Amino acid sequence: MAFTRKDFLRTSALVSLTGAAFSISGCEAETDIHSQQAIPNKIKPKALKKGDTLGLVAPASPIYQSSVFDEMLENLKALGFELKLGKYVRSQRGYLAGTDEQRAQDLMNMFEDPEVDGIMCIRGGWGCNRILPLLDYEVIRNNPKVFCGFSDITSLHMAIYQHSDLITFHGPVGKSDWNELTTNAFKQITWNGETPIFTVPDELDETFTVTNGKAEGKMLGGNLSVLVSMIGSDYLPSFEDSILFLEDIGESVYRIDRMLTQLKLAGILDQLNGFVFGKCTDCEAGPNSLSLKQVFDDHIKPLNIPSFYGAMISHEENNITIPMGMKAMIDSGKKTIQMLESGVS
Image 1 (cartoon, one colour):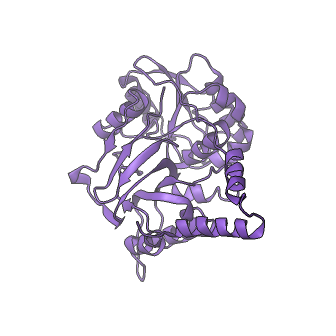
Image 2 (cartoon, helix red, strand yellow):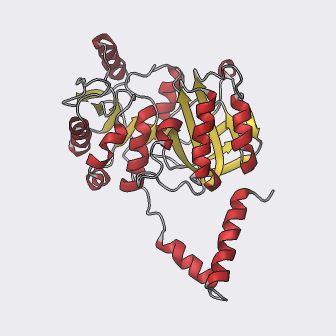
Image 3 (cartoon, one colour):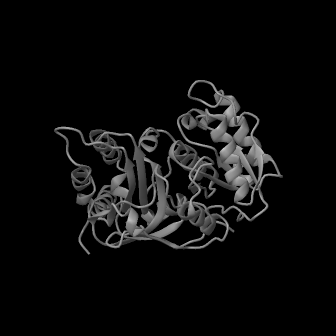
């Protein structure tokens, strides 16, 4: 295997440590440091089943049209769920679904409610970053439940994983298109606790390989623009030995370039074992622009880690469900993601 930038950084750090303060006991000291920083065992929520009660919350933006809200309720009932609506789930305050305190209270109430078996966000939008300081992460830790959503919900996935050790699920929101692919993937992961191999259907194949190969690591990621907005806070977990998966919508290619640069400058890209970009919906190159592939070649290819574009992770109709922090293997040549651990108990 080629010597990667990640290998170089690790070796450089070890050389620096041994040269600065250690002799023959240097390796033991490094082991002690890592053992003190060991990540605790993550908590898997109980698997969902038909007849369970699903709590619906709007931690970010609201659903503005009552007809869309009602259609969502019918779709979720058709999946076999009983539904419990958050007190403020229909609230509207501009582009937010109520005040920060109301949205945080709804989420905490669902975790504490013994009648609620799982929690689903009705949509993304914007606002989750604003409520992170208002959540009680110890309460969430002590009341583990399936928690699902994507887009702006990335903030909550990251913060809950970091501070509550709970496995959450990057997957559909309530108003998603519950088509066959999306529904089957959701049930495989959150109902059955399976470890499927996710492929890209031929008719939806818009993939390309950045760097060929296979990699294993814990799956971490979500919406790119939301993720970079959290850099510098204590709500992001370590990305060491992870497979970073990303997606975005409505961002010009130069903005994708800018955000990947931010991940690079923050040292996150150098921690990765692998990289997957789902889809960048409506991400126009425009005149005098690099292509999206060129941007990946500039930022991801030099990492020399397996990486590809086009997985079923996006703001489009067909989406898989990813248990955040669970180990997976990607094959960038075949454009597959294989879960290696179940995300539910």
